[in-house]
Length: 113
Length: 114
Image (cartoon, rainbow over all chains, first blue to last red):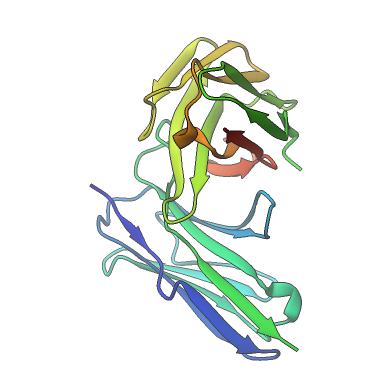
């Protein structure tokens, strides 16, 4: 059974720091992996989607990588800002379309000014 | 904006009463999902749909039923609500056209069962 783990559960950094959030999974047979952001009391906002055939995706200050052989994905946030404070969730899909995403429990990031 | 609307956004009900949550989408997406989010458990799939009248169970489907009589609406029903079903419920759609397999979520429906 596929399991998704995010460590650490919480992270505090000063503004301006570059940081990496980690996501590991137990079965390398994945279709895609998606990173989300969730603000308190809000829904999930899609940040980046990496298809199985891709190694990384970039959007602004965010870069997500995927290494299926090691069962890892990382989300790199450059020059962190207080507005980046949120919970970051990774989720993956094992099969095409029909099955749904399996989620990690998230990393709660706090960026202090 | 994936055009997803959930209703109601907040509901308080009593144990044993039926509850229906509605997810409405405006962009004709084929795949729709219901998740629940609980502290310590993260997001877990309840049911999903891959077309009108085509649905399947997820990880935590006991106590829930769904219906999809038209493309735009996916309903989640708790036949007899229990306190363990107090949770935040999220609907999601899969946009196969813009970015295959990418999921977009609604704002959530917070349900409290007393």
